[in-house]
Length: 102
Image (cartoon, rainbow, N blue to C red; front, side, top):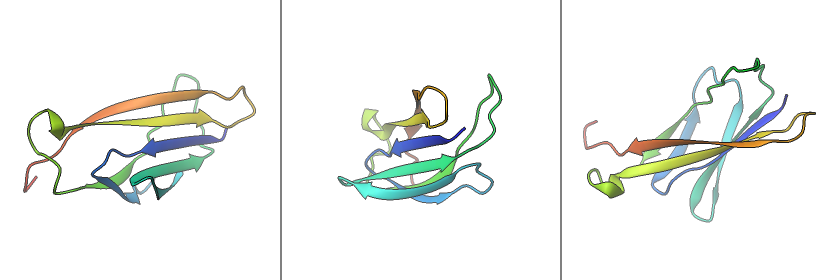
């Protein structure tokens, strides 16, 4: 089954590279000032199983490191591109920007 993951990174994050061993191929483009990461592939996913897609991002040194504005929310959209009825799911993760030296 073909799968596409689209991730519009929060402002201040920039795609660096795909993590070695990832089952999908990832690339990034800048759209309206934000990095959009797109990963595609046809990994084998068994029923009720999960699939990890990972890549490295850099964090801008100008992002706040404390307070509410230091918490970023990132949401990726997962789309089934296979022969089944197309479906779209979302996954959300939180990130607190690191302090200098971390």
